[in-house]
Length: 143
View 1 (tube, helix red, strand yellow):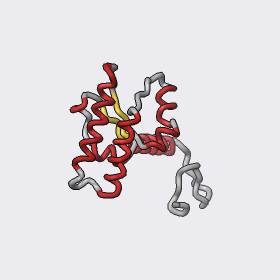
View 2 (cartoon, helix red, strand yellow):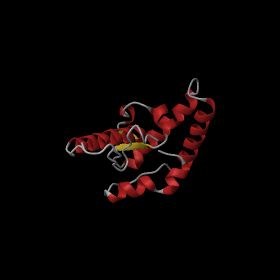
View 3 (cartoon, one colour):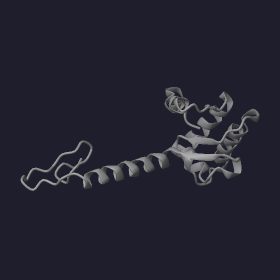
View 4 (cartoon, one colour):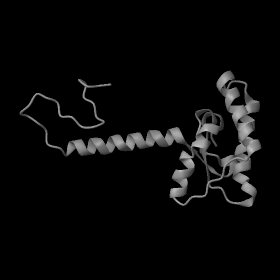
């Protein structure tokens, strides 16, 4: 579940298909409902906006049902959708995958790999110039 621009980019679809996973997108009517709900949540916030949140749950239910095919997970590709649906997706009998959670996990995993790699590197005791590693900033070079 995502906004039109991200769906049109095909980024998630390409990545999923490379892993031989079938992609199911909302039909045109549900996509329009989703876009209206996201726009409302962006402009009016979540407090008291229960009708729009309920509409996102309806779209998730339609995706989960998928005309009898088994959908095992729904990607929540937009922050407003993830915040509105929250939780595990149990009520829809699917897993919800929040892309921001996935990104955060990847960053933590990457940082741990970098730190593990740095621990195995020799330290320089003969120079006062900081060692430089792509993507890693010392306090002198923080961005």
